[in-house]
Structures are given as structure tokens and as C-alpha cells.
Length: 286
Image: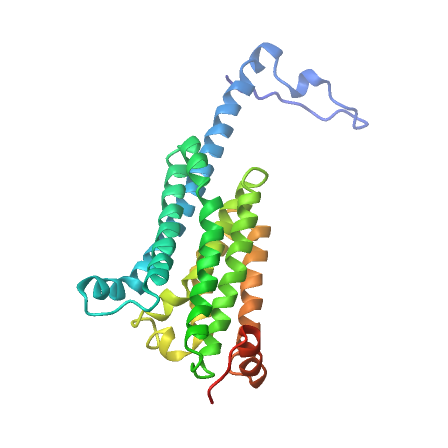
């Protein structure tokens, strides 16, 4: 296809020029659309591949955070130098389920990036079983020791705030993501990442080399800040690719930030120390 430049001199009275003075002959326009469409398709494919690789990176980042946080404890348990908390079966199930969830997220994003959409959809059915089981086990892990050992000091109820946050936000975000998997892939992918990041508070508190000596030594508000920091690449990705935050990113990060403010307000408060044992129907040792 060759473009032909046509000289045109404005006529008196600003009359509309004839079409022949603006457009090249019809025989020279043949094939124009067939040359533009492949360029558009290639651009869209490149954008899609870039986004798929980004979400694979995010899943690997979350998985690596969990490994770094719990790696030392896991190795110590395997070596026999550290005992598993009782009841052993429950806590082993909790650790196994969390690892399975993180591994599933990495596998799913990798399959999507590799173009294996069919296998991705079939394997994704596991989430419909895994999410409710993980939620129930988190509830048991959070409360069973408080029921078995009611002599826990009041400060133990502060940790319960973190656990309650994960128990509420994880199934909410992931459940929404699963519902949106057909209507909005962007929402689905973002909420799966945000919902998983909610689970990583315990892993982050066990990373001793974080700036400032680690969140475990500086308070749980710092730990929440590190969780939000894990989601920073998602915010940057949205702004870089579309110039604005995706609705799922705004809602997900916004809810997590609001929950962090509420958690800090309740942390160590007299009201919470008195309300938590009543909520669980147990006593408090001063």
C-alpha cells in the first residue's frame, strides 16, 4: 500500500473540497484494513502476555515471602529441634493447607501465562473446596488454644485481632474473585492476589532482617505496613498500564487499610481485652 499526497488549495468561500481531493483512489485503499488489524492484534497480545507475567510474578513474590518467613521454623521442626504446637494434627493441617494454597496460586498464574487456560480452569475448581476448609481451620487454630488454655494473658487477645482480620478478609476477597472469574478477569486476578496477601501477617512477623529489626520486634502496625508494601507492585501496575487504579485494587487495598486502622485502634484497648474473652466464653488472667 502506498499513500499518495494530494495538493489541495483552499477554494474561495471555504467550500468543502471534493472527496477525490482528500482520499486516494479506491484501488489504492484496498488492503488497508488488513494491514492495520494485525498490528492491533499484536499489541493486544503483547499487553495480555505482559499482564499474565506480572500476576505470575506477584504470586511468586507472595510464595517467597511465606517461605522466607516460615522456612527456618519448618526446617527446625523437620530436624526435630522445634516442637509443633499442640494439637499437632490441627497445626500441621493449617501449615499444609496454607502451603497448598500458595502453591496453587503460583501454578494457576503460571498456567495462565503459558496459555493453558483449559487446565487453569479445571485446576481452579480446587479453590471451591480449599477456601472454606482453610477458613474453618483458621478459626480453629485461632481459638482452640484459648479454649484449652484459658490462662492466656490479656495480651494474647491482641493477636486474635490479626487472626480475625484474616478470617474475614480472606474468604471475602477470594470468594469475590471466584464469582468474578467469568465476568471480570481483571477483578478475579487482583482479588486473588490481595486475598492471599492478607494471610501473610504471620510470615512477615518471622522475618528478622526486615528494616528496623523485623515487624515482630516493632509492633503489628509495622507488619500491616509490610503487607501493604507487598501490594505496591499491583498499584504501580494499574497506574502504569491504565493510568488509574482498577476498582478491585481500590476496594481490596482500601478495605485492608481500613481494617489496619481499626485493628490499631482496638490493639491493647481496655474494651477489647474485656470483650474478647466474652466473645469466646472464656476467662482472663490478669
